[in-house]
Image (cartoon, rainbow, N blue to C red):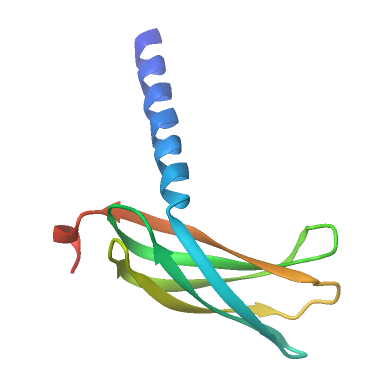
Length: 118
């Protein structure tokens, strides 16, 4: 039983480390166009990994002056971004009083090889 727990723990640690390294393989550029009702966050994701990425989504967040999230919007980017490639995205975030800045992060993706893509 103890060995099973240790094995599962080791697998989870390796999986988490792989996801962190993969997340570092993205570069994101964006601009924000604000209106009274919403902020339109438009940008491009660059895949600097050595593998294709699949089912990529981003989360755009409005932050207050203390860095706290006050609003967010989620957008699907692309079914596949090839290694070394890029894809555009648009996310909409509700306008909230006190929002001073925005950030964008890749929050969902799968690593894969070119032969897996549709």
